[in-house]
Length: 258
Picture 1 (spheres, rainbow, N blue to C red):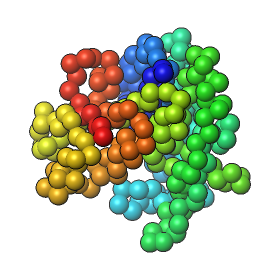
Picture 2: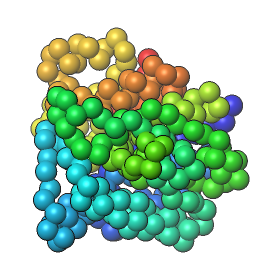
Picture 3: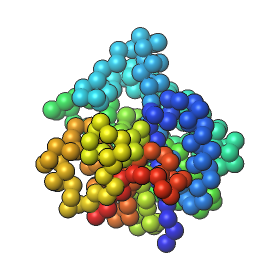
Picture 4: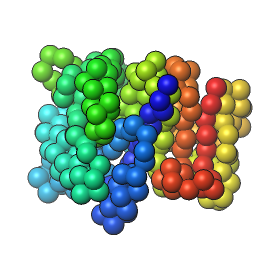
């Protein structure tokens, strides 16, 4: 069974043109089948402000009303996605951009309006791998933005970490799937003020005590819940750290397994 790498990048890479260029050049050298998932960085917020669309957040999550959905569709599925695809082509990595609506690849349900109404936010219900398999078998790399659809004509803003884990789960019966979350830290840290205090291995046994002892809390909880959701559904391993973990064998990072 072949290995499929699903790699998610966030604002620390997307918001810096030089860093993005370097990352995509390195990403293009990965030999195994691969899928890239990207968030929106700060660009959506910047464009919303320019268009005088109010940016509403609750607990760090964006409230997606119709105007906001229009902006993030332009930014995520348009500017960022197509820029990434164009740069990958320049690096001889044949790729194609996707939202969940393209090829009916990711279908979501509208998130319930209670206890908090997040507007047009989607929770992934189904991943359809057939179209993506065809591309991967022909050495074409899918590049996903953080937008899905409900199958009834409505686009939905969907967490990029969740899209990544659901894609990894969707492919787990076809490939040995590995999931990589690239972000600004070296990994999950024992002490948030010390970048070298990386917890190199977390598993289903050690995770609850890390929460209980207050080492993992707040912003890291949703990310790690996605990680464990993946490894509990046949994903081989999940890694969290700087993007160098993909290319350097001695790069410190966190690996999550069952």
